[in-house]
Length: 236
Image 1: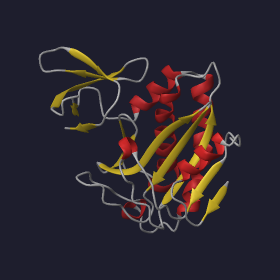
Image 2: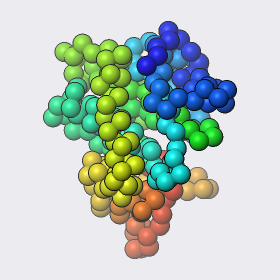
Image 3: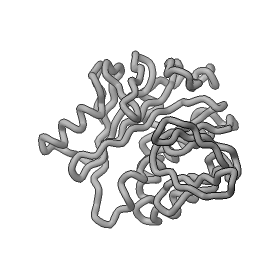
Image 4: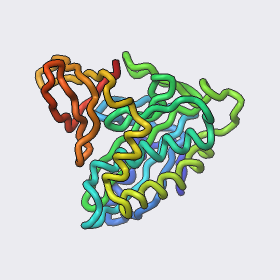
């Protein structure tokens, strides 16, 4: 595990290492502060000192499940870390495709980027403050548990083991097992979700579970079932 005081992006740093032939599966890089953090779909991710900004490298083997499904693995690891170490009985919800929600507010950002045979996994956890990310509500660990003295380094220490465990299950038990476990911790089947279509319009329907590849199934009001493979959703 390596820590730097500041960098533009831990994901960018690890991607550069892979390109330079220095990819190391299992290596974690944490920055106390980022100047160029990026979330899904190129969104800027505020990264001042205090929260957790880290990345790790996963080397993909030929018989691994599809690499994009690692987003479910990471979500499960963060959920377990928060539940077992920091938040106790506080409800924590997983939201497709890779959000972790506490009290219906986002507490974690996840970004997967592929370079050769490696997936660089970027994880940001709101430890001491909740950044402003537009219309979406955010929350921090301190907002929920202000008596806990854990800092960002301690939170990463809590995360490493769950990440290793869920990664091993992804490889040994398969994707179906991971999706089943994710669904148990996610917005219930039958809940109303809304997504944006290619032309920018909104489409609402009932969440009807996941396909074998992790795609979200949405049942429209007319009963038609459609699959969503990428994008964001809103619950309710």
